[in-house]
Every structure is written in C-alpha cells, then in structure tokens.
Length: 455
Image (cartoon, rainbow, N blue to C red; front, side, top):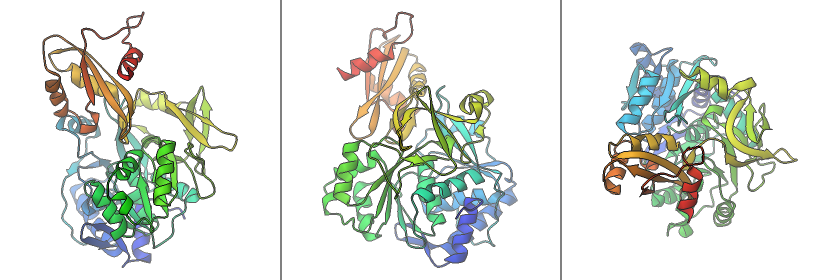
C-alpha cells in the first residue's frame, strides 16, 4: 500500500495499532498512539513558531526524540534538514548558511498533541545534504511524495509483514539509508524500531537477542566489525529473517561469511540521496550475489557511456541554490548517478566503479576535494592531494599527501584536520613529500599517488 506521505504512514499506524510498540531505546518504550501524539504536539509548536513553507534543521544523536523531531518537522509542513551530529562547527556553519533554516532543533521535550496534521504530498519534505565534488555539501530537495513512494517501491520487491517486524536501527538517523530502511520502513509496516544510541558491537549483539530483532539493516563495515567480535559466535540470530546491506559495495566474501554465520539472507540494494534514496534492490523473488538487484517499480535504469542513469517518481527535484549542477545531474530527464555499472540479461544491475572523485568510508560519502581544501588552508601547506584506497574494515579509507611551505609535524596537520572535519574524513595516512607528482600537462597525478600508496 502506498501512502501520499510518510506522515500518513505514521497516522495510519497509530489508528490501526495504537498500543503497538513503535520505538524502543534503552529501557524506554513508546506506543504508536504516543508516537503520533508527540509528533503532533511538536508540529503544532513549530507551526506557532512560523516554520510552514520554510526549513527546520535537526542536530540530534540517535534517540526516540530524533524520530519524533523528524516526523514533527515533516508534519508541520516545513522541510526537514537532518544534520550530522559528528560534524564540526565549520561543516555545520556551511550547511546552515546554504539551508537558511528557521530554527535548529537540538533538544525537545515530549508533550501530547491533537490528531496529526497531514502535509501535502507535492510539498518539499527533505533537504538532505550530500558531499559535493567542489568540496561543499549539496542540498538535495525531495518531496513528500518521492520519499513515500520510494518506501512502497522497495516494499514491492522486499515485502515486510504488518504489525510484527522488529527493526534494529544501528545507522545514524540523519543518514538517508537509516531513514528509508529504518525510520520510514518501521512506520509503514507498523513495526518496532529498536534504536541504538551509539554503536558498540557488544550492545548490537545483545539487542539482537533481547529484542528478538527480525530485520537487520547493515553495511559492509558493520558486518565485518560484528563478525570480528568475540561475542558474535555466541549470539542467537534465530529471530532475524532478513538483512539489508547498503551505503557501500558488499564484498562477496563478507556476504557469504555473514549468511553462513547468521542463517538469514542479505539483500543488497543501490541508491543515493538524489534518488530518494533507493533505485534497485535484490528481492525475495531472486537475488544475485555481486549484484545490487533490479530496478524498483516505476523506475528505469539505463547505461550511457558506462554511467548508470535513472528516472522515476522518487528522484530529487534538484539541488538547493545550484541550478547549473541540477541541470547537469538531471540532464535529459535522467538522474546521472556518477556511478559506472552494467545490466545483465536478466536486468540485474552491477556497480563497477565511480565516475565521481568520491570515496566511501564506512558508508559515508567523502569527497577528497573537501579534505584537500582543509589541508591547504593550513599556512604550512603548499599543496595537498587526497586519494582513496581499499580498507578491510571501512571498505575504503583516505590517504593524504602534502608538500610544505614551512616545517610542520604530520601529527599537527592531522590534529588540524580533526578540528575541522568529521572523524571519518580524517586521512588514515598522511605523507609529506618534497613535491606532489604531476602529469605531462602539469596536472596533479593522483594515479601515481594511488600506486605509491599500494607499494
């Protein structure tokens, strides 16, 4: 069943199953009736503040309050701007300057409200920031209809049972993957969202058993880290019937080891923030190892000059304040994903490489340009280059290279980065060179730097 908006999903869940367990975090438990009531109260408060038609940012760690805040903003008719609480002041300032939110929610108190207000399906629902190739984050505009229909699209391929699913939310809630495969999925199937406040492998393994989790949305980094934990082999996974993998490519060996140990299939999908976010998924009807599945319904995928192009009702309206980049991304009515892929004879998509200069570190998109700009902003640095390389735990990691104007220790430069960048953007290694390598046309030679790191 498709709802016009995700707020309609929550309202329907509260009406059909008011005493059903909606949210769990630590020892706290919230029913669907309470959930909808808290969301309604916050939306009324925001409307009194005059946010309708504007934007409201959230800067919150994983919690029950974060779920309520996100739905509260959506119900108020304002556009939700989820901020990463790991960001430094510099990163947050840049996004806030672009988004111009009416207010930023950093804390809420729970009070009860009237019946839920339901927003218009064609209004803007989300302004989700994703890393930019220019080093600046780009705000992706998504409508209520786009994110709601995307839940229904994925449900067609991977249906969830009503009133019985228990979904573990380990991913950070500000991330599009956690919203689509956790926050919105739970409301749609009237399931229970069990929230992990801060990732600790032993806590995740404990919750799998204690809360009798049925659906486990994960990532390659998460699977690898959990399998390496001494408690993994002792954990009872019998309640889990489905695992999702997203955020980064899942190595075949990791998938096979996980499925053998857990006894539940891993369904890999593919998407991006600009696509609401899901474009393809493996399904109950068939999955191919190494593939990210078939296009979800109403979605077309084609390959043009190696690049994956997509169109469908879940695609973004465009980037905020970036008409030129919007025109390039949506050229000819197709989303140009920047990923290199191929379709097999059965219509399954395989992602082979990335056209964009982007590195995925532990499921987070990192653009080397942003890290380079921070390094270059230090007065002692003359030039900087950052490249990605494979990493057994995080999927990929960053390697930085600098030439200097004046002497400085590597550790001082890394500390400078830590003050200005989220931890996953910090280079795993940093090397000081006399000069950075150049090509014959005097361009920075990143290929030789990648080769240098591998040797």
